[in-house]
Image 1 (cartoon, helix red, strand yellow):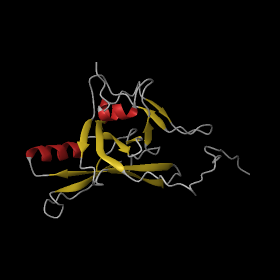
Image 2: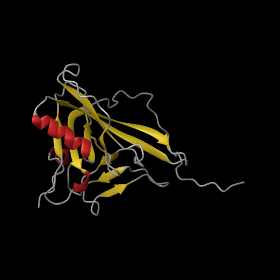
Image 3: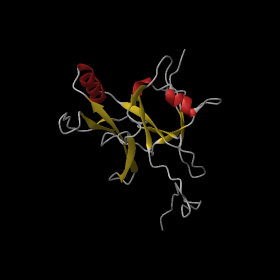
Image 4: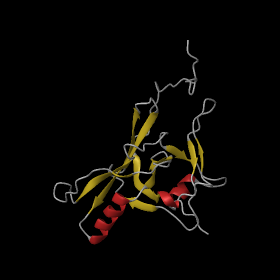
Length: 197
């Protein structure tokens, strides 16, 4: 008989039988961070282990860097994040991170934004209506998937999905952002994680 290697064991129960407050919506705001602006030396991930399941990320940007805010009307639901789980042929679990935003218009500025999203690599922070901040694409980054930009049928623009590359998916689900000691996750999100000198 082969030796068994236990990487993860389910040890706690999970009871939603009386829950009435499930989080079902994201605030219609995304903070898009250039992957190269992340301070990898001073950012800390706490991934799940056999002993603990924290799933937290203490994200720090390089000095004088900050993310870029994309904001839409709160009555909508165009900004959202989602994940697809799969396994490689070798049996390793991987996660396809996806974030959907809406881009509108036909100005030169809009075309430049789309061009940069198409050619760059990003981590994206989203905030759910309970205040939790999630970070998508931290490890390998995400960029635009295939899309059709149609002003007429798209209501003046298009839903754009940024996602992991098929051959460079993430090893973890999106991390929950935790601020540095004395910090505040909501304030950090609202300041686009700016690292002032």
